[in-house]
Amino acid sequence: MIKKAGIFTIIIGLFLVLVSPSLVQAQSRLTILDSSAEAEFPLKLRFNLSAESDDDITDIRLHYTVDRESYAQVSSEVYLEFVPDTTIDVKWVWDMRNTGGLPTGTSVEYWWTVRDVNGNEIETTPVSARFDDKRYPWQSMTEGKVSIYWYEGDLSFTRELMLATQQALVRLTEDTGAYLKKPVKLYIYADAQDLQGAMIFPQEWTGGVAFTRYGVMVIGISPGNLSWGKRAITHELTHLVVHQMTFNPYTDLPAWLNEGLAMYAEGELEVGYRNILRRAIVGKSLISVRGLSSPFSANAEESYLSYAQSHSLVEFLITGYGQGKMLELLNTFSEGSSYDRALEKVYGFDIDGLNTLWREKVSLLARPSEVKATNPFQLSEEKWMQPALVGALDKLPYRIIVF
Image (cartoon, rainbow, N blue to C red):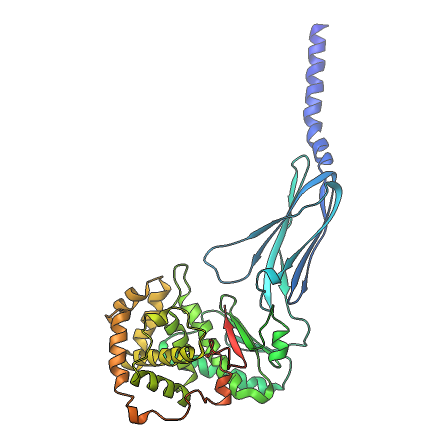
């Protein structure tokens, strides 16, 4: 009897081992019923999830990443609060008013992890959601690495903008060796008012936004304002190109180089700026190059002078030392070099040395008799709207913000 009982016990034990996996699987059924994301441009991105299980669901987390240039893969995790149950419907709203917003066309990849009370877990496959401005019937035109999106104006309007864009890229390469490494997108709104309707807390003077890490620029250009539009695109396209050439996890470009390259790409410095620069030279009120390395002043007069000097500094380096040296300087900055070390490596002088050499050069260009008596701030109407005049908020109708 003892032997038989032992055999029976072993048989029962084997039976439990064989059937227990299927029993556990049946008890831990965890299913995603629905997952979606809806854009409410420009304010919100809403994520929704429905799930069910044989046991109470106790933990749901949303994970998402934003498609933008970065040296590290960064994902965000949102823990959702809810009452545990076997069937759950949850939502989470990304309120852009808390983060400054995303440009139209941004791709957001998201996925969920769901756990029940027994510790069973399921993870959904990552899915991409688009944050698009669907209020307008966008058309598109692509040439090379540049795509232009617009909804007002005929093809000739967009062809002119595309031509100006391609010409700007050619000039930039000829002058500095810089070029587009990755595709960029230009979204053209019909005017500043339409553009501001696509922004979070816009200012009345905002004429556009350049999102350098996204390779995107949004700007308001009406078909009747092509001249300003071409200049604005050239200026901001230069920022996108220079960002791609120098992006690194350690340091940014000095402001005078970043803005000076954009101003230089526009062409010859306008008369108003030249007068401002000459007066500062004669009056010995130039800003030091080291001072121009930090963000420019919001004071109108200092802002104009900062941009005029930055143009002059870049012109001094390009015409005096050549395109090859400027390209070498950009490549050196892409390695995370400090301002002084980058200049010393490429040109043999630091910021203070550049300040001395440049001042000696420009002092020969401005004599008291050459400084016009007219108000140097009487720039053309086009220039008042230039994105270069970032600090002049008291006189500037529209400007471009760079992120």
